[in-house]
Structures are given as C-alpha cells and as structure tokens.
Length: 120
Image 1 (cartoon, rainbow, N blue to C red):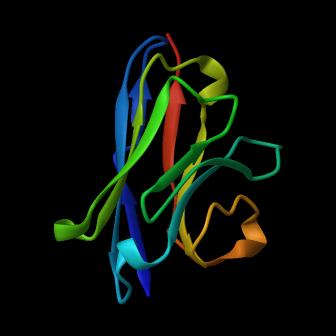
Image 2: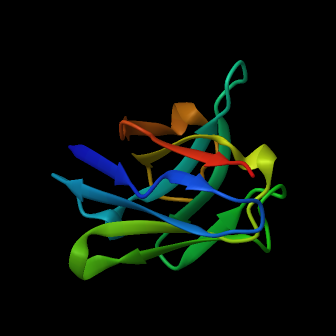
C-alpha cells in the first residue's frame, strides 16, 4: 500500500489550500482515511478522518477544514479554508481500520507528508 500526498505550499493567513492523497494497493472507500499534522517540535496530531459515509474533524479545524473522497480516483482530499499561522505543519494522510479513528496507532499506512506554511 502506498499513499501519495500532495498540494502543500505557502499561503497567506485567510487563504485556502486543498491537499490530495492518492492510494495504491488499497481502496480508500473500504478503510478509514485520516489526516494528521505535525508542527516543528510538536507531536503529530489528528486533523480529520473519513470512513464510509462518516467524517469527523478535530475541534481546532472544525468549520474551516473538510475532508472528502473520490472513489473513482481512489483519492481523499482535505480542503483547508481560513488558514491560520498555527496551521503551519507537515500534513500526513494515513489509512487504517474502518471507523472514526483518531489515534496514530489506529493507522497502518502513512504517506510521506506535505508541508503547509501559512505566513504573510
């Protein structure tokens, strides 16, 4: 199983980015697909997960970020709006057991990460 994340970059506060994560070797609609982020000097933290018809977002991003899935492309997305400087981090996608799972230990496979920098 391989997960390829992309879409990171430099954006000003208040701006938007959309991250993509394309899977090979596993169908994204059969498993939980999560997004995590890790800022410098901090632990990796849960951002969002989509599993089946269910989605859940961390309180810190609720109302600003939205995860979605395109089964035909075997790809999941993280739409990030109203970005803040504190959203700056490396963002990772991951695939794990089905369900609304929020711990890193629930995920078996990880993408390589994509850097999001929010700065003026």
